[in-house]
Length: 176
Image 1 (cartoon, rainbow, N blue to C red):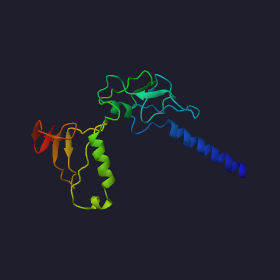
Image 2 (image 1 turned 135 degrees about the vertical axis):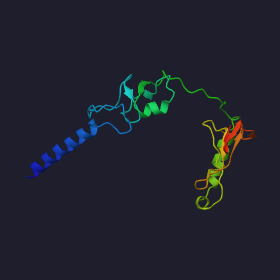
Image 3 (image 1 turned 180 degrees about the horizontal axis):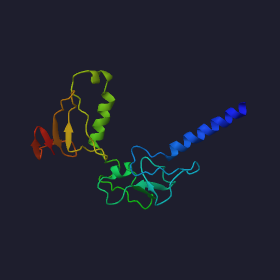
Image 4 (image 1 turned 45 degrees about the horizontal axis):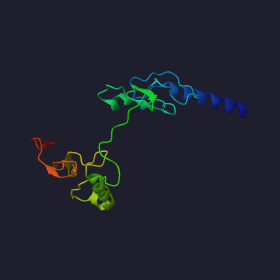
C-alpha cells in the first residue's frame, strides 16, 4: 500500500513540475513554453535571456541589445543576450574617486535617513529626501514629499544642490 502511495506522489510531482517548467511567465511575452530540463542550470553565451529566464552561466551576464532605446523593457521581455562580462564596456565614471571625492547629495541623504523617525510618516509635515544620482550628486529636480494626492513643491538645483532657475514651468510642473 505504501509503495502505491509513493508512486502516486511521484507521478503527481512530475506532472506538476512539467506544467511549471513548460508554462511561459506572464511578464515575458517572448518566452517560449519549451520544457526546461531539471539538469540545465544556466544559459550559454549568445542565448536569449531576461528577467524571467534562467540565469546566464558563470562569467556571463544578460545584456540588452546595444541599440535598444529601452534596455530595461528589453530585459523584462526576454530580449537580452548572454555575453561575456569582459566584453561588456563598463559605465564610465563621471566623478573621480578618492579622499577628495565628496558626494554632497548622498551625504545629506544618509543624514536624513538616520534622522527619520516613524512618527514623521504619520504626521502632516513635509519631508525632504534628496534625489541623488548614482554618483551621489544631486539630480536636477528636487521635490518636497507629497501629501496624499497633492504633489510636493519642486525646484531645480545644480550637481552640488545649489538652486538654479528652471528651464520652463508647465501647469505648476518645473522642468529643469
